[in-house]
Length: 227
Image (cartoon, rainbow, N blue to C red; front, side):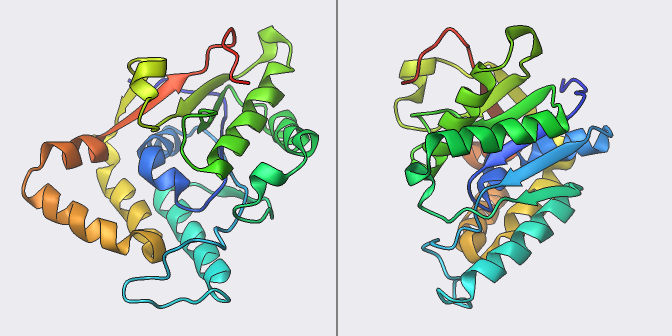
């Protein structure tokens, strides 16, 4: 059971990061009337996929991905999208204090009871990890009694070894159509994957069904040190 929150702040670096692991959860929060702010740090300008067959090029991809992100948010019922204007594949090189302040400003404005982002060191992509570090550092600086809960997504190969089983598993079958619509919205990046997923769903593949219907999070424990 997903409990009602005061406000949910989602912070990811790329368009489509939300689609795979949290779009069902976001959709449920929105159906509950919970305000959700999604801060997407870049437009995924350096994404490797240009459509299948290709319908984008390196010059047009940013605007295409921007439109896809807006379409995805509409599918989730999310109406507070912040496009933060950083550049894809450069977040790891941004000044640490600049990134911490970016997150701090978002938290101070939205006053979330829950923040959702990646887990530092266990989210594969350098932009994912850099974003996660900024989120953790910003929240760690807050007075303990005022900190929002931090739910993180981790999917490195050694996640289970480091963190064990997920702390939170959200069952999102009631909004599976919205999750599929969100995934399809990011067509330049997901069209090939969605064809395969739809095939597996038709075959009742257990792994595909689990991935669609359940979203898994680790609650960040503040006594851990990721540095």
